Structure formats: structure tokens, C-alpha cells
Length: 431
Ligand SMILES: *Cc1c(COP(=O)(O)O)cnc(C)c1O
Image (tube, rainbow, N blue to C red; front, top):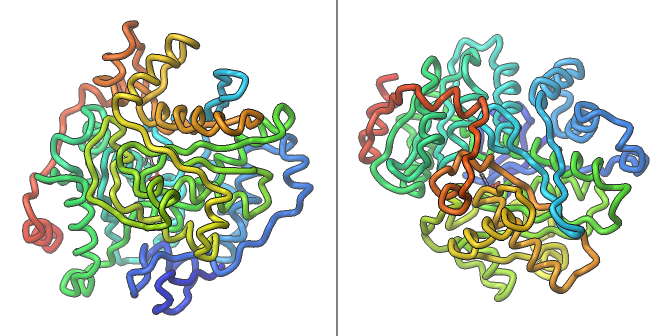
């Protein structure tokens, strides 16, 4: 599959090149040249297929011929070696649990898939690739874990000091080997700016091959379309009108869901559920896209002021505001509403949602007010124990820690403090 740059000022290129570059030379995001719908029979009979079979069929057009069939099959099955269960909460609301991977965040799938693709492309290459990642919390851990030990690839993670949860910090600072954590005195936006600056810095890029493992990278972004198919497989015989509520930050996950819909997944509508970082909620009301600096919330992985994937969503809808609006609703919720929702779900069902899932739950409820016949599935994007401080405020019971969390909690953090771009550049230059 070839990819074009959404800025339209760079040559089209292969999947391999798009993964290795991360972003096009004109700073545009890569987008597939074509999206071919799958045979309707694939969806009619989806419950007879394994998750690996579904994922392989859905992704192959975007990857082949650069990765041969057998290798792609094993990449897919190594990526998906955990469960994606649906839990029904009410007659109209279910949740899709995406937190059963090694770092208990949905980003595990994209990170594991991308790491394996890059590992394959770099197998016979003597040049090391340096992956730069800015994280507001979960990306860092998932990428660190996914890339650990991948030959020829080193990973540099930038995270905002004091603004990620204790467990998130442990997950990204304790692995060692080819993974390095930089603790930035500043916000997530500062981390992201430093990464962007490095990509534009000819002095660095002439010496080293830099790429990104944020969802701007097609190999991180596209595999997220699997989730929507796995949910449909479990629900198609129970409900006619399935709607997804996606807790959104950079809008990579929901945008991958829209690609699944383009492939023919029979889904009627999407809900982008936001915290106070609500540029898309405001856009759908006013038709004005007006990004603002991010504000800190308890659903920190969604604290994004200017979602990088929104431009891909606009490409899917040919920049037509009304056609987008007919397929997408968006609501935004405060921290107070989010905590109240965590209490409400817990008291009425016994289920503990994390703050991100709670925003997704609230989006489902808002949508159902005017669309009572829909069945809403909100994506539970992280395990609640990753946000223990918040969860303990609302849930009185002791919550057992899963093994993935227990295994990092007593490890010793190793991180290099970085105060500004010059220090970051100096660090990269001495590698
Ligand atoms: C990254 C993340 C999100 C937001 O996903 P996007 O693809 O950036 O919209 C939501 N919840 C959690 C827990 C995350 O880690």
C-alpha cells in the first residue's frame, strides 16, 4: 500500500518508508492512498473467525506487499496475545475492555504492532533507528514495553515531570536496555514540542534516523481498527444499532474506528467523548476549529489541546463538515462529572471504570438521551488501578492490583532530567 501526505507537498511512499519516517518530509501525516471495503460476507460471518484472522484480513491491504503474508500473520498473532472482552453494564451500555495487555492500556496493541513492523524492516539494516515519543502518561509505558529488546531500535521517551501517575512513571522508567526516559520540567505540550523540533532539526536528522511512535505513525494508528471489529463480533447478534463512544485525546483511536467503518463494519455512529480539552466538541457545535493549550485533568491521557489525528478524520469525510457531523457526536465533561460517573457506575453495577472510561460512559449516556434505541459501547482504555489516586477517592473497597501493575511497582525509577530543547538536543547528539 502506498501512503500520501495530507499536506500534499511530499511524494507518495510505501508502508515501510511511512513507518520509518513517522511523518512526511512536508510535516504532513501519512494516509493510505486507497481504502477498499472488505467482502460483506466477512462481517456477516465474523463470529466464526478468531481475532487473529479478523485482524489479518482487516489490516493486510495497508501493509502488503512490504511484509510477506506469513510474517504479517505472526506479527498480528504476537500483537494480540491477550483478551478483548465486552462487559454489559446496562441494557443500553456495554464497555469493551482494552486493558488486558502488558501495560494495561489500549496503546499496547499499536505499540506492539509497530515495534514488530519496525523490527522486521530493520532486521538487515546496520543503521540504528531512534524512536522519539512524547507521552502524557500511557503511550510511554506501552511503547517502552512494546519496543523492549527490538534490535536496531532505541527508544527515547519524554514525559512531563509530576504529571503522570506513579504507576505510569514506573512503567516507562524501569525497563532499561534500549529504552531511555527523559523527565521534562514542563507540560506534555512542552514534550511534544521538543519532539517536533528535533524532527525539524537538520543537524540531528542528518546524523540519525528519527521516527515517532505516537499515533501519527501509521503502524501505531491503524491496528487500533481491530478493537471495533472485535466488539462487533461479540455484539452483532444482540443489538441492531451499535454505537461506539471513544474517550479521545489525539483522536487516533476513534479515527481508526472510522477506518473500520470504511472497510464495511456496520456501525451507525461514533461518539468522541472528551474531558475539558474539548476542541472537537466545540467544533461540531460551531464549525470553527479552534485549538487551545491543553489543561490538566484526571483523565490525563486525553489532555490534548490540538489533536494530531483530526486532520485524518477530515480526510475520511473529504473535509465535509456536515457529513462528519452526521456520523460523529461529541460531548465534553468536567473532572467533577467524571468522578460522579465513576461513583454512579460503581454504586449501580459494582464495576470500576477508570477516569478515561468514565468520560466514555458519560458520552454514551448523553447520546442515548436523544437516541434511546442505540446500544452504546464505550472503550475502557486503561485499567482503573493505573489511576489509583483518583479511583481510591471514589471507591471505598480495596482493589486488588493485577500482576502487570505489581511487577513494576517496586522497581527503581531511572530518568534523566531535561529542562529545555538545547539539553534534549545535546542528549541526542551524544548517543
Ligand atoms: C491515549 C489514551 C486515550 C486517547 O486516545 P487517542 O487515540 O489519543 O484519542 C484515552 N485513554 C487512555 C487511557 C489513553 O492512554
